[in-house]
Image (tube, rainbow, N blue to C red; front, side, top):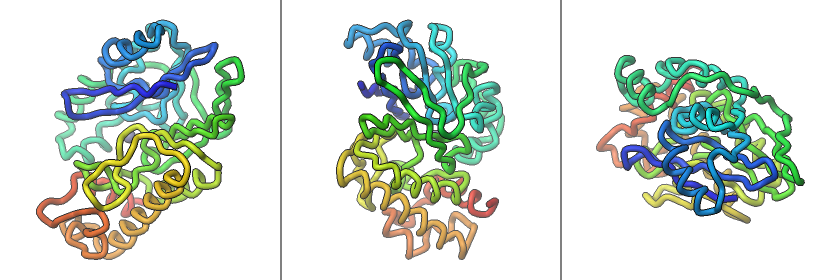
Length: 287
Ligand SMILES: [Zn+2]
């Protein structure tokens, strides 16, 4: 297993993972340009060609994870995504309403952004559901665990033999260093999904971004093992509970950003409203 760092415009970073198997696979595809830049370069160091990939398994359908699906499919990989996020792959514009709220952009600007960073609309080769198994040959078998919350079709890809789970953005601690707030459109799902992941017996947890696992500004490791897995799940659940509590008092991001019960825990200093807060509070109001 090889983590591959994909970046765009030097700021947004997402990690994808190459899985070495008789039918080689990659977890997530990065941005439109990633397959023929970051991914190609990283695989070449391991003596693998992008054209050798048989599967791209998306942890979810967001632009920074599925933007490179089309070139990978053209290079010969089958694209798999949970059926509840498949619409985002079939039509890039389907992501505009959610992402415009998240990025605080107009619909037109968001559409232009998505069309720049997502290579194209594609038909997924396989729509995943809970319990599906992707057999990569040898004894590499990956199970799909549906963990909605961040997006409706978020999944954990569970490599039970290695007790390793690729979780994408399903476990976000207290958010990343810049945004300082986890992103979930469906909070009840997020909370249940964290509990579900806690029951699997995960020994290694591989995320797609480096999230914070506490109120200080530092980003934690990308992949965690041992006691750090339980700690990451606990902090993610505690952060969700704090947001839920704050959301029960106000749905106004400017008010919640100054809420003393949560500001300290998430490292907010009151000078600015964390950008994802409106999106996440909308999730509480809508569900
Ligand atoms: Zn995402």
